Length: 255
Image 1 (cartoon, rainbow, N blue to C red):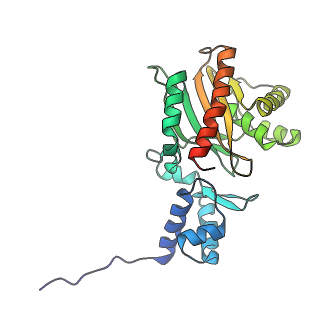
Image 2: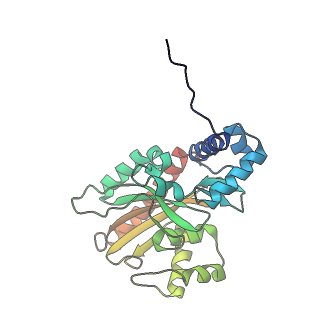
Image 3: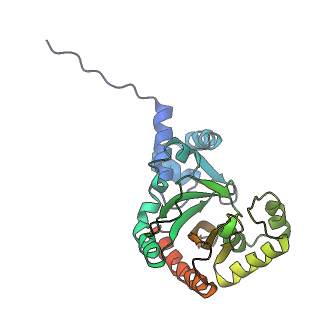
């Protein structure tokens, strides 16, 4: 006599939340409620209510300006070892690997979150035996280090807005507000920013912004080296080549 077949109970709200998470993670650009509802095949009202809960839990970030949703840092806390940028970095890893090998630098991709953080979604290691290693999922304030300077320049924040955020930053070798403002202006003009041991002593980082379709910084791409490893002209050359890499990465992510 055969045993009766059993089915696994399906909780609709949980299944819908999973469908929404998959839709958010699967897209290289943030989406609004209606687009996510269509992708998850649920009603916009149900989608909106679930999104509010996911945002509250930190699994999804909400951008109040564009009214769109993107993966939150809480997802990295759930799976810090295997996140791989939630599939984001995998799309541009070969480009970053080649750049890291060419310049003997660690190349990192940071996502700009609506909560004003830079979230590391992936990195390519330097080929050197002694190198700077990072951890996927680590975070820092949005305006910190070289990435923060280029993001501040791309956002065209007012001096008052920059000053307010600057006061909350922690540096190993803090620049003055005047120097920081000047460096933000330089980053905006030339398209790349430099932090030479200010945020982390002994570390130099060159960063460029990667803009979305609205012209806002969606990511910051940085090349990190030990301080003193490159001359000023060499760092400028890395900055110029990072701008080209940023365009290639943006294209690979369909931004």
